[in-house]
Image 1: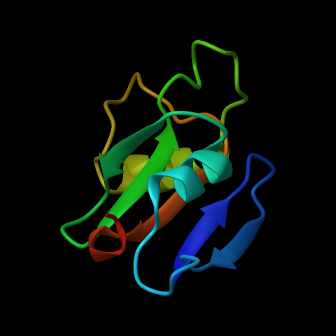
Image 2: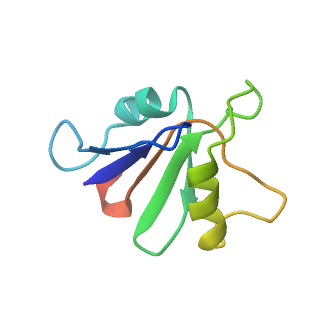
Length: 92
């Protein structure tokens, strides 16, 4: 099971429609555009909007905390928009 973390900090448990792995189109709908993967551990990844900063999405404080805690981003970087955290095995 994966987690959708919205900009306002709310979390929602989500599952792939096919029950096994997320299709690209599903992930694009959750993050609102093109996807980029940010590895947060050996087993998990954070799926973010690749163009989020360019299109002015709001900072996702919850996702930032998770990324910083796992040394997934540089100290000057930040995560914007809604994100999905899932197991790497749930990606196609």
